[in-house]
Length: 164
Image (cartoon, rainbow, N blue to C red; front, side, top):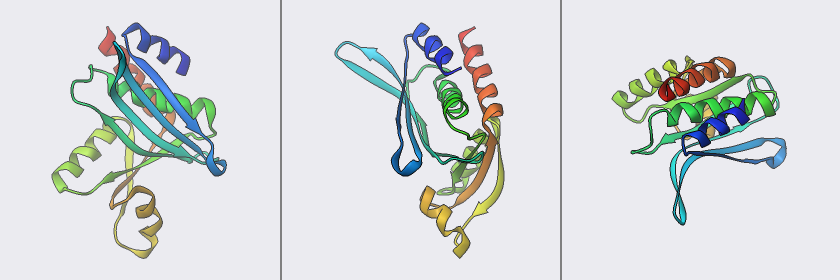
């Protein structure tokens, strides 16, 4: 699937690139979508994640799409990230934290992630047992979990609808 997504991105004049490392037995991922311009690349969006060996091991850290990115860029990022996890790692479920910096923005994040196939499982707050999760994601918010296959399927459908 990842090869197919790279091909589809090229057909839309987009570059899909992955930078993968294996520090301390973990996988680290930086996935970018860019557009080639004379003498440079224009970054359009990216996902940063890491994974450990386990079905629930994919941890999504940063996802951003820059203003001016073409429609479907975010869907391509989601689809490619999940394809990478399914093809390269044993991960079948992904976790992320919808940060709670501002209540209005938090609600928008939760809704956005739910549209992509994630469900809230619990709140990460100031309790002692939340400290490890706060250290991983750098804040409090809603811990959300999603099936990599489900998130990928939704993202691929949306990515291909934009092309049609």
